[in-house]
Image 1: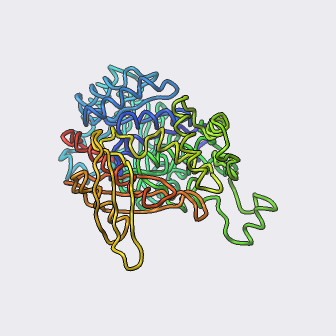
Image 2 (image 1 turned 45 degrees about the vertical axis):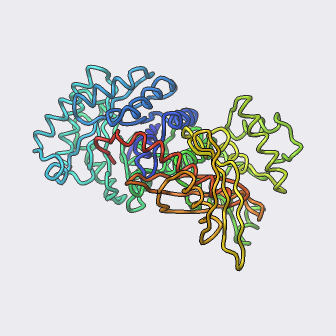
Image 3 (image 1 turned 180 degrees about the horizontal axis):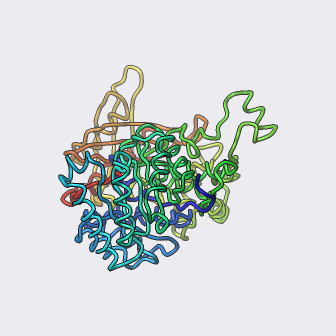
Length: 521
């Protein structure tokens, strides 16, 4: 069993997390998330894969220049070009890390790389040696380590540590591991890699079997001291280990997990919400730690117990993760200073112009709702500051929407949209008012995207709650998501659809910049 100590948090939300289907973040969005992750206290932030496109390179370079309170890492294949490009992107960082990956499992060697084991060892040694010319902060990931021959894996780790790697990563790339067997593999590596004491052993688990967090905790108990994870557990396929789950498991069960992290847990909820808003990936209601139901109690017995003593049914104090309690004591007569103070309590520090915009929207909302909640205020920040919808160089924006429908009436929508600064309007009929609105928007914008998914969530309780709509659309093989919020669900739907169309425009503009390879280590 591993000894107690600090567990390093390596956050790959902006690299592996962005590989989630339909997610495409621009440079400004990555910068916003990066600054929040720095505030959260992650040790290493993997900013991207610079060689894949000029956009990815620019994002990594900007993050390395802006964030000085953590290590910024850049991903690279085991090739000189990748490594040189990665270093060019991160060299302005405070303690930049080059992260090299190369597969070690026989199935990858045979079918993907078409290399022998000896050739792989030579490639790994050469890649790390080349990176050593730039920095001593080098991580080597053995892609598909969980299905690799363990003796060969130990040889690979020994080779790269001798060549200069300071961190070696054991990825369960395809989410195949189960906790007790993953613990056995980590124990084997710790016992049979002769120079493992010279490097940090990291783990990177995927959630295909729903076991990513359990596997990580098992690995920590066997000596792993770095965890690679993402906010909300987003990522390829079923996603990655969720950062908030690992951190709060260690904090909550410190009696059996005698470790610590540098995470400032009161920023967990704000970070979760920001990532959800900017990626367009809604958090499932029953998601551990950050789901809307994680601290909700409907059973009368549970409610009675919590009212008498919170710990009867809550193992985590909601305040520990920054979850606001109760309703906002704010209304239409509240001033901008009160709103600014409440936003700062929630973790948002906005400029004067941003406060003015949020305050104006807040008062308009307060005229419509009896109670205004923290979640409502977050939604306003999303639209007015984080620019949802409209954060991606808006080509389209909603001017007005009018719908008519009801029993015995063919639903009709009249919509006005600003297209490249010019107001255009149109009307259409549909199966329902939302369908009619979408058809009218498509006709005005002359777009032919196909709607893949449409979902609605209530931001707060009550019939006057704001609705948050998420849509996923596809066009010519490109898939994007969009979100919108409004007390009127049809308006929220129109906002979400236009947000998705703006994202599609961004994706089209960058469609020629194809990724050279995606890694899900």
